Image 1 (spheres, rainbow, N blue to C red):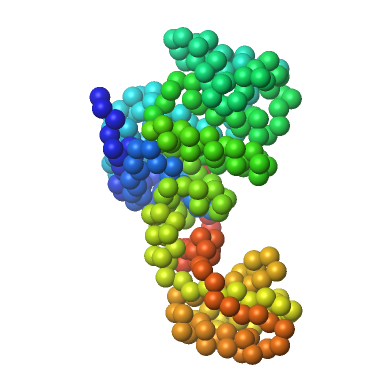
Image 2: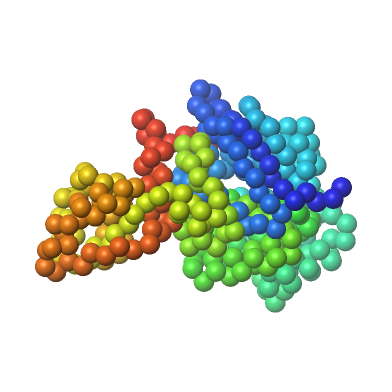
Length: 315
């Protein structure tokens, strides 16, 4: 079977737990060789969606394919070609890195077990540490072992569920370098993350909140599609100023960004008028700045929030 150009193609996916709709008519397309970011707050339905894609959960409604296989009827075939890295990857701490990988290869009955373990160790820069006990590894090195385990069976699709949570910035950067190397070799990666710098490293992304898809596309497309104007305000008395600005015409959001405020809204003219008084105050610097991805996502969260404001379970 030849590899499809569209690796993930789902439409109308819906999943309920009890009377709660966790994923609500979700649709997505991911092309082969893409790193596709999957973003959203806790409880938004990301993990549930990932589990439906790889055959671990059956949708209550909707249709679609993953790697060319039907997600409803061919989940066994999907599982054989997917590497799934969960938020809580468990290692046997009293086994070495190589022993952990060898154990996983034995569980799956892989042919050429030693060769696959050696290749995984080399690919992730773990060969020099192969004999180190897993319990002595830092978070970043444990993360590498987790990725190596996902790659043992040479999958065509990686599903990574917040793989860099709790990992230091240097280790996160190295991890993303590995992901881009894999994608350049033709592997497709769907990765959920809370980090905006990681979202900007993706070829495309989708944002889900309260079970619903709110936006998708490249970073530039998502930012343009939001239609927000953003101003930065720096100087003294920003806490008091933020209180004054909230609720003024055209002011959709006022968010602290370091030593500045980001003030955003969909009507640029109205927003500028509401900022006129601040611009005339001594000691304040007010200037138009490009809208960032974080500005957009804060806006989307506000716009997509249900009346109850209660996060869905089973994120």
